[in-house]
Length: 157
Image (cartoon, rainbow, N blue to C red):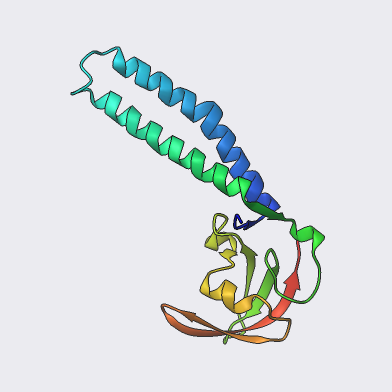
């Protein structure tokens, strides 16, 4: 059985847009670059040709990677969820030991953007939060040490 890859609707749309760009813009551009480099003659010492072939390999690899993820995607729209329990796609407000509030959305591994407050469900913080509720205190073990948070709010936005 194929393992499903959870991702938010926004993350799925972003992957679909990247796939479209790779297939319809970048792939044709690199094919054209290869054809132009071939026209310069001897391929054994043609740096443009080798660079374009390397770029083509990267593009094809990324296309295959994204197609695999999209085909296995379990798309979750947070606006269709509710409750006080932290689950995938929830946006969680946390108070740290200094009562500073931080806010994170629990997302898939391809959607992570820590400066924007998007953390993976398999990150240390994500794993510590999943299944917890408002008012729970969580201990997060990171490479920097242990940090404690209290869950102050759970939203699905």
